[in-house]
Image 1 (spheres, helix red, strand yellow):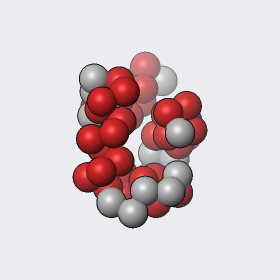
Image 2 (cartoon, one colour; image 1 turned 30 degrees about the horizontal axis):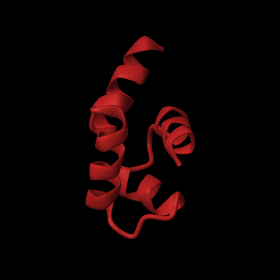
Image 3 (cartoon, rainbow, N blue to C red; image 1 turned 180 degrees about the horizontal axis):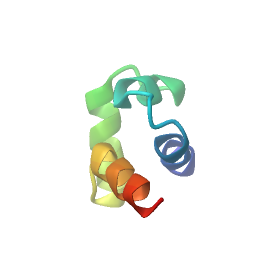
Image 4 (cartoon, rainbow, N blue to C red; image 1 turned 135 degrees about the vertical axis):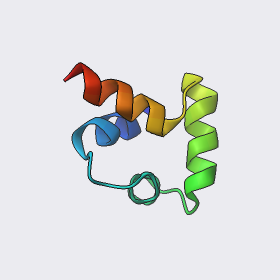
Length: 55
């Protein structure tokens, strides 16, 4: 889940966090965000922004 969500956050910049959450099997974007943050200590939106700014 972790690596797939990271890949989707990088490779699908137009997909919402909610869309990505549903793509990987979460029914709630907030549950996905809490789970992602518990693994990475970073919100999905912050992770995406950081990856997109790196190019």
